[in-house]
Image 1 (tube, rainbow, N blue to C red):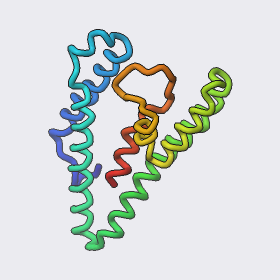
Image 2: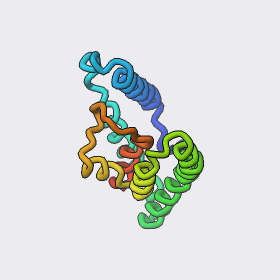
Image 3: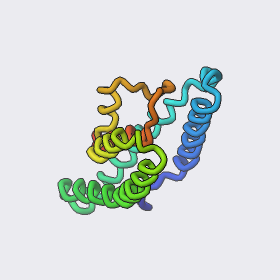
Image 4: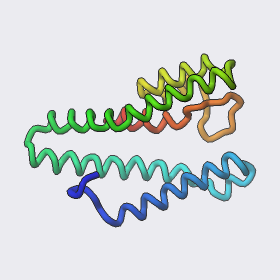
Length: 157
């Protein structure tokens, strides 16, 4: 986010949302029986989506006023987003594959599917088709469950 699109009050709001997600996941992992005490954790993620949509739209509008070429502005946005995420994806793939191969060899096929569908930004659909509920404890280990939100973001773009 640059100076033109920065809104000071939103940083504190984002901090509260991050804390909410962390607390929700802590309950989900360490104390699922008490999850009902914090059952609105999903609202933080939905708020992030709304906030992202607002800030991205605002940024695109401001840049389009400067360049007056929305196609160029939009393609630049997609390119910068891809260049920002690609190093993290690459590092994840390079480190995760050998670790899973060494310590969880039985999970390699599932990992390859996770990485494939995560790379294609359809991880959320892969979970839905396999009927894997995100908010329930499930039997199989999913190393890249966080890909679901990135997939939704890319589908919005």
